[in-house]
Image (cartoon, rainbow, N blue to C red; front, side, top):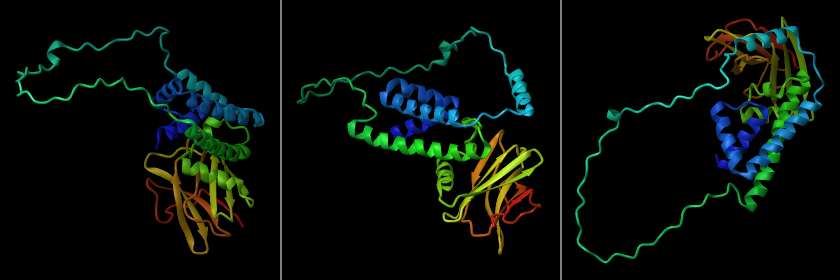
Length: 284
């Protein structure tokens, strides 16, 4: 991955508030050093802001409010001016470097010394590269918009920072492609406090499952997806539930009439279901 690609990925993550502290530190440094990164960040932030404004307002549930208040109460309270301590290095911890006596070599014809000029920072992109980067950014923004729109249309007004639970670039592109397909279809099921929506395209032979409110499992268990057709169930990947919205594009190819099921399996998944499905979605 080039520095430009890395900067674009970081800019997208910054706009969606999904960067780790280390990634955020790297992005802040790149943004301070390069005008092109600042422009890139502004484009992503503007896109995300437009999507947030376009989403219809949704009244938060009482459970969500209670969980937020509980999370706030559990946050550690730090002093305003926390003292910063600098580690002290003991003298005996510094190794002693033995002195090496310099020997005089026989004189020889020596080329005159040339004084090299200090290295100058290389710009992150030249004029031609900036044009290419601009085209790349438009494509990357389109991917973010497409995936966010797919989740936003289904769950209506969810925060964009929570929509990328499935979130590798490959998964994001696949979800955007499914949602943009001319024959895209959706089916929704409810169970207890959770809802699940299957989005699929017969032309593409792809589908994605988006779940909201699905409970987390013990560390030795995982949710497994299945395409269920005439030949029986075929594994389509595993996923773990996260707070809020979680989604995953199913592995493999979807055939006409396939149902999609979810079971609870041992960590790592199973070749065949070992439990009854907790949900089955019919696509016929």
